[in-house]
Length: 99
Image (tube, rainbow, N blue to C red; front, side):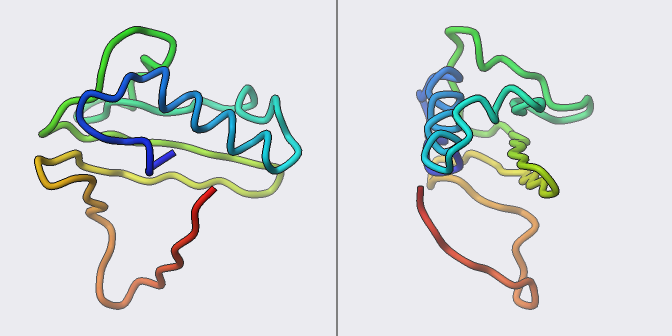
């Protein structure tokens, strides 16, 4: 999901990446069990994943992915240099994976 976040990507592209991820893990309808996320700021994340709108630089996004017993939420900032994760720090454990 985070890998699909780039300037000009459609909100529907993010939703597609999310649904593909759930399908690869044997839960093709898993994305329907929670709020997927979207633009964030002073209000809660605004879900536009079913719209034709596109992601833009300088905007904060909050994405959610859940499975039974697990929830992942990540605040991200889309910049001209790519996606930044503000919560990352030198002491925070980091694991990279794709898919």
